[in-house]
Length: 267
Image (cartoon, rainbow, N blue to C red; front, side, top):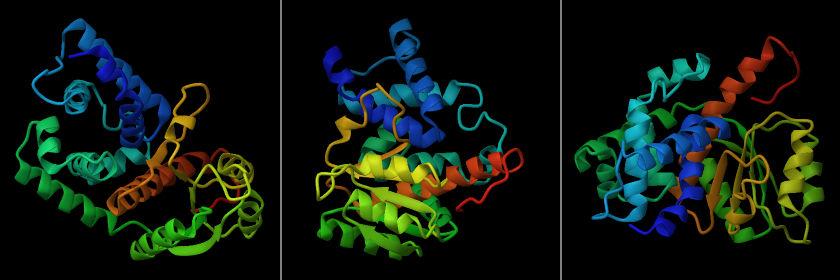
């Protein structure tokens, strides 16, 4: 299998690993372990299937044998991962966020299609138990903003407002009563959603999901990259699954900092 075909899939595998493990450091570490295992011959790339499916299968072979790979931090995330079936969460991420079919996901995980379907249903049931929050949307395309508002509302969350520019985003954020940001990176007046998020995060501790047609501008490896990144055009299932992941892991990060650095935080 040509090496170039695998290299093209690495940004997407890194995105998936970050979402799966909840941090860029842990995700990139597992991706490195996977590539090393392929080079060492401990896992193989199957030339009979697509490069992307084969690479993700190799990743999960390493993920499955790596000690404490699902939750090795010993934090509240560890406890929640024990109550939330990891297999169900993996199946949901592969189908909803990464866009694999049930058949491809079954091939990646080496299980039956029926098992994948059951795992996705179980994961969606867990998502229904997520605590509701208030969401700030930074998006200049009103059709997309309306779609996002509908999806967020269907999940039981409330919309703080929609900001088409950097300045409007900062203005809406000043009210402080929100727990999640969905942000485009290229805004109506030429301003930057990245800059808007950077300004907001100087004051507020909230998870951020970037939704953009230009993922390559964020997946450069030259600076800290977002844990949660969705490419336009998006599927509704992708947005819903990613919101659940962002809220799931952010609750743990907020709790971990609460004792040592008490502050006003947005849940």
